[in-house]
Image (cartoon, rainbow, N blue to C red; front, side, top):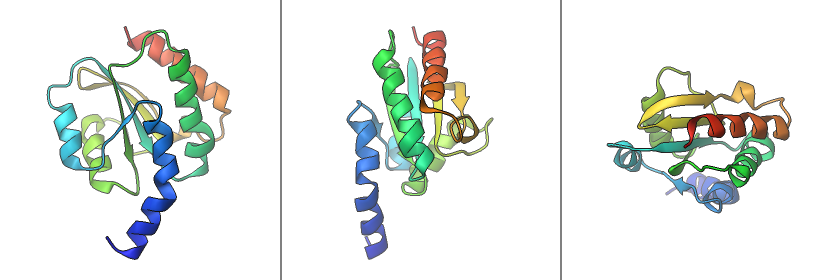
Amino acid sequence: MNAYERHMMEMTRGMRQELVNEGFRELTTAEEVHEVMNGMKGTALVVINSVCGCAAGLARPAVREALNKAENKPTHLWTVFAGQDREATEAMREYFTEVPPSSPSIALLKDGKLAYFIPREQIENYEMEQIETHLSDVLAQFVE
């Protein structure tokens, strides 16, 4: 690992930990992504994490709040970090090619298929509470 990579890992440690502390499994390699997706059953909430301000101030807090309020939780909670874990992010995006790449973003998968997607355009310039309500509605609709 070169000096730049070490610096970026250190800089993003807290951003990664926010979701890990909520029970998300961080997927950092393409192999990990394909392993969890192979024969996936149930629902999975996937957060494409990012260093941008809308991830820090909007997406991650909204995800935390929506999950804390959810009556039914997804079977799986996974996250990949765009711009940092490129291979893992690209591999995860292979499972929902019907939507353009977007980060941050939030995907809900059901039995390995995309059920719902919240792109950056529905995160950036919205209030955290609006995003949390949007995601809460999605969880209530798709998670049993």
